[in-house]
Image (cartoon, rainbow, N blue to C red; front, side):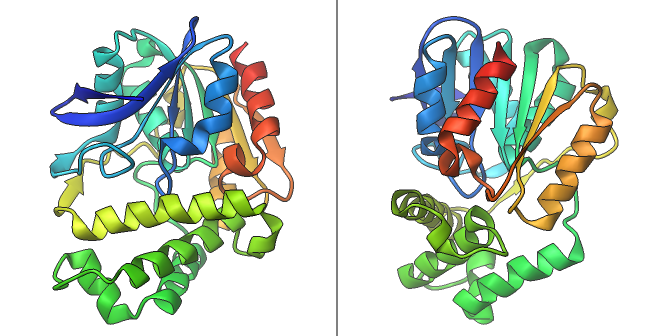
Length: 279
């Protein structure tokens, strides 16, 4: 465990192993701990790096205007990594694609795990489902105050409720119940997500510089693996279809009865797939 400065911020990160570099990018509702199984296993044959994005885990809060894929490239620079394979979960996958388009010579391979896409608008039914889940957990007036950073104080009970609602919708999946997960995975997912909401609602306001990657996927030159849990939300399943058909030569792996975080819910299967792809 360590801290490194890059692009004007301090990032918490871990590094282990020797060989070709692999960078693990966590989901928006988690932090770098979601990669525990993969980090250990991949380090037997690769130089593995995982770090917390701004506002997550041990990294600084975001301030002003933030570009996550530029942060990624800056972290690689700070660690002396000229070229790496990128493994991105959820929005970590989106930022992997953004980096591959911005600096194609620096990205050897890309594994997209339930990945998002910069510039993409979620389908109406998914957006409504997400909003309904949050509003059922936190009254709308307080939710709006937290998002606008106008609340006098943030109620930690609301943080916990929002985190559980988010974990139910994504980590579990909109059509399953939490008992499908082992207790350790469920508790870890809720705890990481609670940290995200606590920091997001208590930290400074900020904006994100979001590139529009929607119509540029055919320009991805790195070999790609699309890994998706079939119990994930409909919008993410649709994105997996888009990546598979649009990124040249992309390979696809579906994990039945699996939600949004296969690295935690199906760690052995996910690690095996990544080892085969990276080899």
